[in-house]
Length: 178
View 1 (cartoon, helix red, strand yellow):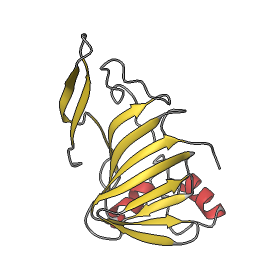
View 2 (spheres, helix red, strand yellow; view 1 turned 90 degrees about the vertical axis):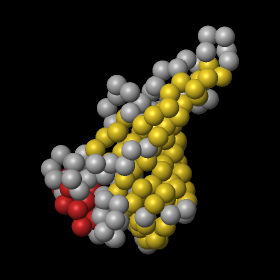
View 3 (cartoon, one colour; view 1 turned 180 degrees about the horizontal axis):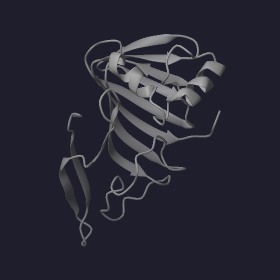
View 4 (cartoon, one colour; view 1 turned 45 degrees about the vertical axis):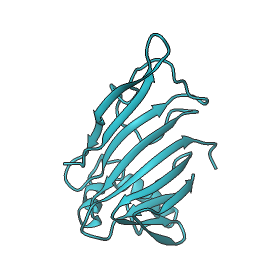
């Protein structure tokens, strides 16, 4: 069961005055099951500059997907289970990181973790709790609670080598492919 996060959203009433639109658990939670990551989507924009008009929740009624919309952004928290559970879940056919994508990772010299992937985004990652290794094609670095990583469209993976979950907040912004 993923950790619930409180989300408070502001907006405007019909007279243009600022209001609180919602206050409660973030409603867009994607729990992929035992050993897999859980993703809580907080907000999404579909253009830059973003529109603050209306009070519609853009995280509702949409399938969960990794990248933000073209010219848009996403704000989410990912809960990474320990690799002792997660690596097996990544290898399940149809997981998005099955043998087909692992072959892609191996072709790029990244056979050391099945979670390698690449997006055309700039990502701001903040470790909220726990610790996790950020893996690049060459090298890795241990990140702990409070550490920040700026991920710039690189091929990467996340490896939680502890036996406790690790929560990472991400802001993903659409970017030109490298």
